[in-house]
Image (cartoon, rainbow, N blue to C red; front, side, top):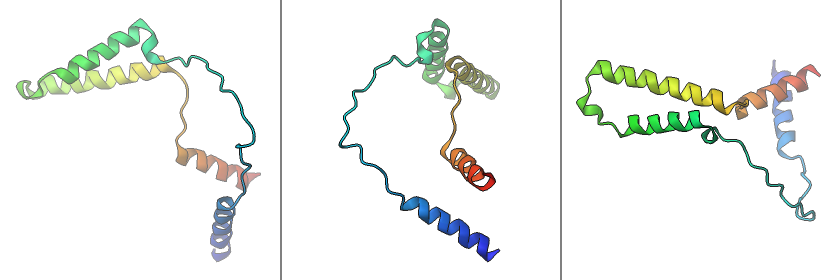
Length: 106
């Protein structure tokens, strides 16, 4: 068990001291491509307008049932906006876990 822990610690420290090539010598002109955003479509714009309306409402005047319905509506709108936006996003922790598993398995 101690050897495994020591090996993992050495692997982590070796990643910390890996030299990286400096990019100061090379000059690359950035390519400007329009990135698709969910706000481009008409359906996404209407959902964003509805979200703004919900945020602008005075919650103190609503009863608990109406607040609950608004929370459900906000969740549904956010889910729809994610579906319109498309793409897959990987968090840093998941990416690190995938890399570690690939190193161990390969």
